Length: 446
Ligand code: ADP
Image (tube, protein in one colour):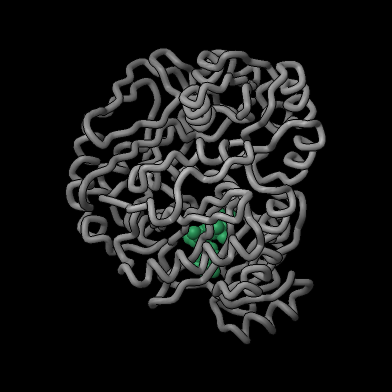
């Protein structure tokens, strides 16, 4: 087993990885920008190294600085968390080339799945159903129109290297294709450094359902079932739940088996998530995330598995500590992503925390790197806490969540807690009757 792991991230996920390491008897190295010298992950780690100025490009995305920090501290392995360099195959490759273990999948898998066009092609090969659309990249307006007419408007132009819901454009009529294509290509270039785009059928009322898998180097692949992440704003998840309120047992079983088979067939290792859109009883693959996800906690709550510890075990050449038959998911879990933002305009609200009270009690988990007096810097993502609740069934889980949101105090900055309170009080949410467009409609009406 590793003696020392460098955590190439910040915020709640850095802390989450630190906690797993400590419980496994592993020392931790935090890396941080100058804006984060007082951050919780830095305070708690056994060692810390400043890797650059506040801007992410110069710090958390600075590969030479991170590799130097690992060398300097004699770390054995690097965990990238989510975001930043977690899906950068180059980083994974360089990490390994410098003699450190990358805690995640192989650079090849990261590369293939990072290109969504290639990822869909790979999935098709192993019988995973994908959203109808182009088989390759779109080269020009006329071929875009031809394809759109074949699959039927509306269509969605998406960035091949896309992520975080960026670089997507809905096109409802061929007259808008030229403009939308240009905008999408520009957006892709600015956000991901390459302008390639592809086209998919735009589904009008799907749910976003994703399957968590874990795989080791001995060919064992286990599914930790699904999460429903349909409550989104700007294609970004706000509230997630597991299991999905909409799937029956047979459908669920079929879905998770398809994913396990696929992962096995391309020798995937570590944690991974197959993302699908689900509409009219059909699943359509959209992408695979080759890292731990923000919302992994709800899966841990219903399955009783520590996903980060398993990732570390697998990277250290150990077998998964359980098999599929050991996983008996139980009860229901919901996560609210709490952001330091105005709950109506979503304008970021960095600043100093003047008062903090986290809810507690049975079945309650708050993953957060906040503390009293902490100054949230303006340079990074505004996620400041994940409130994760578990209970015997969905109804009692919602009640527990409501109780927790009422208890939670975060003062000094604006947060999205008021929005969460309104959403979980709504009849559609309570009945589980929502799709990916529901939240935006709800916000525009309320
Ligand atoms: P990203 O990698 O940017 O997160 P995804 O492909 O995972 O992009 O899609 C993010 C979200 O965008 C989905 O959860 C869904 O809400 C929406 N979306 C993606 N593809 C489609 C589609 N073909 N039709 C309708 N909505 C889509």
